[in-house]
Image (cartoon, rainbow, N blue to C red; front, side, top):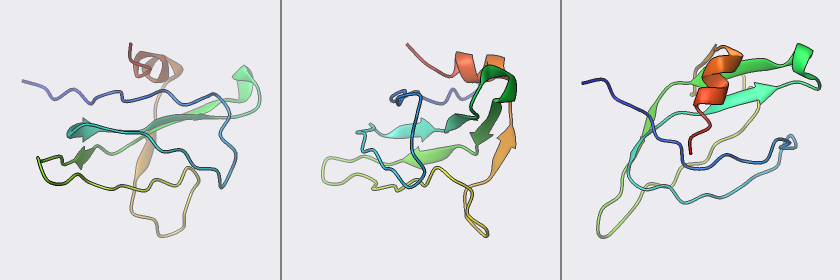
Length: 91
């Protein structure tokens, strides 16, 4: 059976560079899908590799995500279509 990544929360359209948000995420497998650009014709879409959030009775993962390219960073992304971005929005 194919794994389906979870959608935790869709953040507001505009996230400033260097800004941060905190969301609660239950244990599971997730990926981040982003859209960058000023106008629809200039949007670029990307999806990062899946990652796992662990949750037990006594502890949970603490994960920090930076939403801009980091040279030598440890989270790989690849281009996706606008359609895949829209489908990833969740309920």
